[in-house]
Image (cartoon, helix red, strand yellow):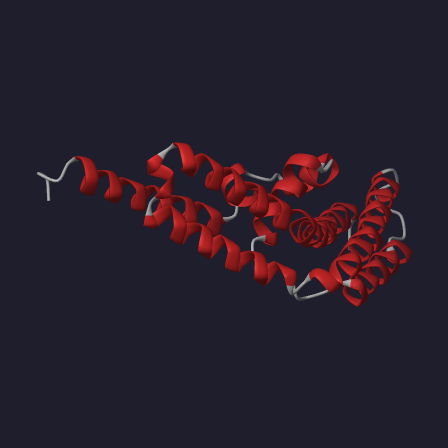
Length: 198
């Protein structure tokens, strides 16, 4: 294996490990913070509903019943939240090891013996798989994209992988969900405010 191939392999594994760490942290954040967000939003809309009749409709009530049920779903993970935080911390350390390995290999001459570094990469990969928790909370993937691409320093990975906005940084499922929401809003507006079109 040549130096460039090894650098690309390390960067790809850095992406896998770094994103995995952020996914664990995203699950932890959702479990920790979402019930508070739900409670605050419900209370705010409830109080504003006393003043504005448009916030006292059946539709708004139904939406907040659904949001309340999602709060119950989140509570099922509550007893495991510290495990997600601890695992994320272990995995982010592996990502830092991969970064150090990347720059070590990058500084070596092209004709070096890369086998010790390949062995180190494999060892880090094995530890990553032994730490990871496969069961993650709903929407953690979307939040992990934000945490990884917009909060984490990934320049060393991008040097090899050349991340693109729509291909890598924004999840396809989020884009499809966003388009569906826009479509529903447009249908609602057309139905309510432009009934003569239908």
